[in-house]
Length: 235
Image 1 (cartoon, rainbow, N blue to C red):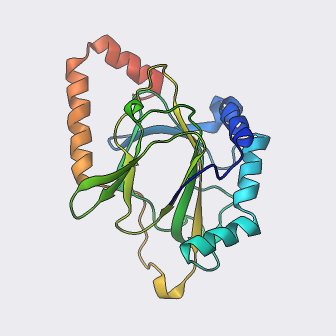
Image 2 (cartoon, one colour; image 1 turned 180 degrees about the vertical axis):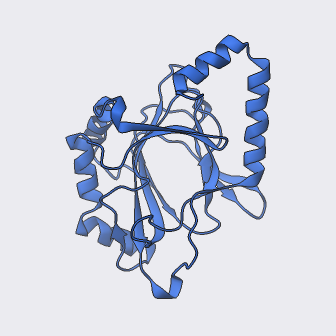
């Protein structure tokens, strides 16, 4: 489900301004063959506007709203923000096509769906970073969602919920792609998942991403490659 205008623009503007508030100590850079982005560590200090957003989406009224639109009774929010929080993709960053982890790492409750709100004013699809929804059977993208300011996405989790943004961020003014996210859980015996897995990346796009990065590595001058590694904190 894609909802525009669910949250007040003034609140979202304040959240966007808080991205630099935690400082470098609160951020964690995630980079490997499948992804490159940074997110705020669980438990890191967040600004008052971000906290208000989470107070809203974790409230009884909002959780009841989510239960109503998803048909999942007794949805359980996660105030600890495991795998959620503030997320940022700088120029060149991407997130390979994948299905999310299926259980909370501490409570082992089932991951039912994720909720994220984008914070990018005037974002154009040509800037990269569009949310791609993939069909596992046809191995193709069936929908791209532009991460425009104020756009909220409710994404149901399943073993076939392939999504991500495989096109690297490349905004002409160098600005990053930003979002604020959270996950919700359930404990439904009839749908309980016995096995546990972390993020699973989609093999066809993993191969494509490796090819693209190999081309970049061998075609760019070594000085530019080293500069990119330095700026992203990679080895």
